[in-house]
Image (tube, rainbow, N blue to C red; front, side):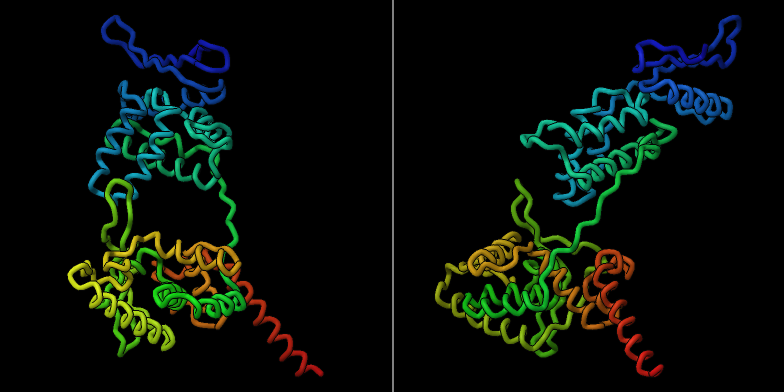
Length: 382
């Protein structure tokens, strides 16, 4: 029997004769972890690979060793924050399946791992497991690691591709209505000009938080009423705040802003210049638009804290700072601005991304078109 059970419902021995070396019979023997049905399928797959000479001989490397090698290949080639996120996810992967040899990895083991992320702590303090979105991040990372193993000759195929797809339910976009925006603008008049400038510019331009804190005064053209978004700042624990490129090439863009926002920025710059003169050599000489009271680069988390402070103070609808970007784009959609313009202004790589994220708002627009057409047709038919 080619597939022999070793431990009930957990481990199977696959034994395939592949020829002779003199009088000695050559066999391919592999231990399979999982169910009988999957073991038989693996046996069939192996027979085809061995016959077609497409089988990649797997070594005794464990998943943890593969993870370590993969992380090493990524260091210095991706952003610091992204690398730290990968390290965090890889820690969970290694904790759960790091001891398993790459040659023994299969769909059952991987699906059990994702279920473990859903139902247990996995070295976390929280009682509940991870959300589906985070589990999908783990799934994507496992696939990338295993695809690298194929590229390096450690695997022939990627068992993660046959895992039951992880579905992430799309959350409703968090943003302000026109009435909410009106209330926010009203209470802002009572706040420091720096707070006004941060929120006005975020609402007007729809730029991301890091793009906002990355702006310098050289990026602001008061005559043309534009800002040039070409960089961002980011904070990473252990590294501090640093400048980086924008999210993608299409994120580099020139955005026209309203005369109202320009006036707020001018007023804020005058206040900043006054503070610079007042402090003299104590001023830290940052050329950023948004700085601390001593002229240092503003921490990328500070705009979020400013918004939260105002929300709490005036009992406004609670949204994230990124919600201001969603608000800006949703207001543009409801105003009937062309999708191509909205997408380019937002720095999306293509229009389909804009449609995907803001489909609900586009649906509302389509309904308005139907309502208007109904009014027109009804009038003509009377």
